[in-house]
Length: 218
Image (cartoon, rainbow, N blue to C red):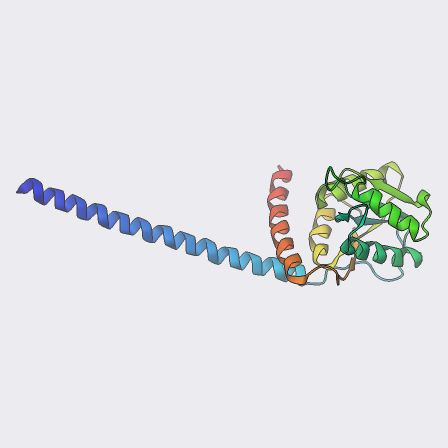
């Protein structure tokens, strides 16, 4: 009889413990979900806050065009928007040299993003001698890291980074992290790229960048 009572008490304790553990688990999940929503809201606020720093009339040595995907051998419509924005600045005399930055999208492609961008610019009348290629980058961090090396090799000091509006905040942060000299950014608005998928993807990319930043700092 005593053994049976002890067994019942033990089972009751186990049930109470399991119930408390489940409650703690669901509270933790709920807290993480709330923190995730807050973080996404914060990143969206940062992304949507205007980050363009280049002022019309300012002249720099080089315009750095950050890569995006090619469609076959030619720039995708989204990448064309960045290139057209860069061409507009170039024709205004904002900079003398282009750096087009981006590596190979896929082993099926014949050209790197940089080579595809170079060909597009040449077709628009830009002399190839004013286009410097960065053919290795696979991320925004690498775009700006390798472009800075090219600037140093060619004695170029000042730059304006050219990308889309949703990508501007992260690009500017990375440039500052890499010690660009007074980094400036000029932003293209996108018609070709869907708004919300681009925004959400950028929130995730920004989250990854913040984790990478912590690792790189050490």
